[in-house]
Image 1 (tube, rainbow, N blue to C red):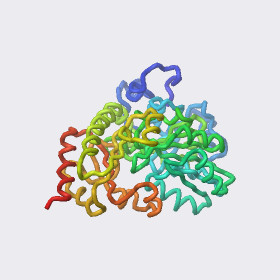
Image 2 (image 1 turned 90 degrees about the vertical axis):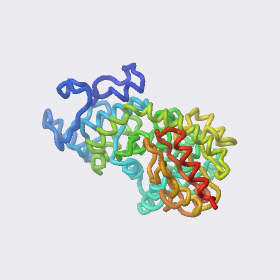
Image 3 (image 1 turned 120 degrees about the vertical axis):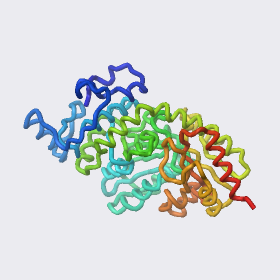
Image 4 (image 1 turned 60 degrees about the vertical axis):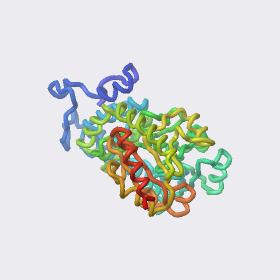
Amino acid sequence: MIVEDKRARKWHSQTDLIQAGFLAEWSEGAIRPPIFPNTTYLSKSAEELERAFRIAYGLCKPDPEMPPVLMYNRINHPNAEICEDRLSLATGSEACALFSSGMAAIDTLLFTLNSGDTILHSRPVYGGTNHLIKEELVRFGINNVSFGPDDDYNDINKIISKANSKNLAIVYVESPANPTNTLFDLELCGRIAKEHKALFVVDNTFLGPMWQNPTKFGADLVVYSATKFIGGHNDVLSGAITGSKKLISEIKARRGIKGNIASPFSSWLLTRSLEDLFLRTKKQMENAKKIAKFLNKHPNVTNVYYPSLFEGKQGQIYKKLGIKPGAMIPFEIKGTKREAYLFLNNLKLVKLAVSLGGTITLAEHPHSMTHIGVSDKDKIESGINESLIRLSVGLEHYKDIIKDLDQALYKIYAK
């Protein structure tokens, strides 16, 4: 739903998140986009509708310079178009595709690969992504190899050579990684992808579009579980991919066949969430900085993995990336699974729940919850141990969050 040339506009990205992609004249002067529940739309001509179907069924390639044709909700719809316009402008990308969930976005992207292709991915990645790569794609002959944060240029190229793959198709990097906040040198990863003529994909869910822009380091596509910080209210399930017009057009054509576009209502909720994205995530980060400092000094906490506190190689990568630390705080407590569960079960204000990035502070146990399907070997190599807690900081007053964490930590060892 392109209103004007995006590149000619001079508004700040925060303004684009609120007003781009919609004109009030389209809906009787409504200043906010309404929900369009239609399943089908009128076409201007038979030729136009034929072109839309030919693209949808892969009979011809979409022309990224031509506007999309509204034809059927499985293909596209006004609410998705509005949200996609706003998100692409805010991220500085040419285009965006919305999906029914983050995993739907990743699945659609990775299943563009063919048998014999290889994915090189960072370690760790989200549990669902790990399962998709190592359990689902392999059944179709799609290979995978992984690298860790300490691997340098030579190490990674040795990993690629050892895999004996003649077709490295995608370099897939999750940074910061879920659940450990592990950072990867995106410039290095982009260089390796370029040398191998592979697609460079970055999952930017943990920081979101406000605090990191992977395209600066050569990312071809950026993936988001928009359910998290972009949605931010724990009431909408969605995913997004941003990138060039050409790549996104191809992804949208595949999305149309799979039928996993975000619904009109989900797209409308996401559009609403974009309006306060900057304010929400800024306050969440302010809270997280104070909470991370508190945890870092707590006698019952052994390690805090918050980017601004990183030292050594991780600290160097943090400075090189020039990013903000965000609102995710993985930390390790004294003890193992028993103590971790006691801590979680004694929380009062902080909620024991998965997901992240919302206004409510959440905590979970990655080892036995979101990453339960990850192999023991990969868990050990990735630092996902039984004492690790993943904390997603919300908008409550930071002193109340600290008070609740403190009482739960002390109850672990109470006589």
